[in-house]
Image 1: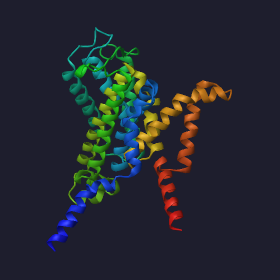
Image 2 (image 1 turned 45 degrees about the vertical axis):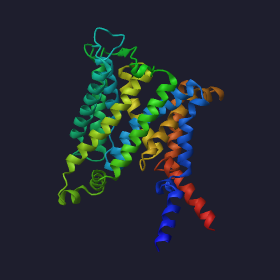
Image 3 (image 1 turned 90 degrees about the vertical axis):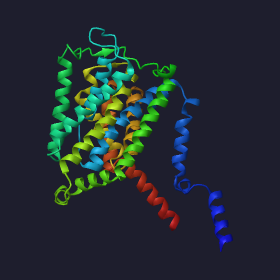
Length: 347
């Protein structure tokens, strides 16, 4: 018996860790593709396609966490990201030397993340006692107020012009505004946020939040503080959006009120819905689709003889098509395809 157990243990050690067998091959291929993408792509693909996709995907991920796990559709997430971007420009360095304070990065970076997270948390505290359309309206009102305030305030936000020449600090001697370093920075932060959302969703807090989503009255009767769980969810989601805001201003090199306008606010909702609200990978899929449509829609429309300025029409049609055939986004289409494939194999 002892010899048999030793042989079994040796066989298990030879087979490798158990978790390795549970990793889908498609995920391994995706990780390898993303890690080695700069080796076979140009700076445009790295920064303007995947860099933008990671940034927008992070903001949509914060919305997905609130809507998918908490049942709260918040339209203030883009404003939270813009708030973090503004704080980077105000506390850091920019071309508007009269307003920017020029603090060191190790001081202005946590300050910007903290202020943006507090802004998103307070916005959530105003909306957590509402549901459905009322939550959407309250968060949309906050986003609109933030847009008009930044546009009309010249003392702190420099009004319509905003801030330009906002550059990331050369930490470790690396120029993070370059295409390849920024790509890996945004990839790393997006991966960490993705893993964090997965971990939180399976933690006791995440399970309680999903219970609050499904039946808040029963959860309250069981002794759970429903408003506190929802506010904590807003704080977590706001921190993710704040990280995206820092990447956003470093990618653009500028921040202005138009970044947090009603159009971009709705775009984040579109990205989250197109990708799917059932899993954290959905926002990144929706962001990639959105960026590809926004980038190449002008060429497609010009090729068929239409006005290139109507590229939003093509994006809207793509959104309607996906939602019409799959209310839960691209992820539902993927699940349907996998189900049909299994049925075909079984038959």
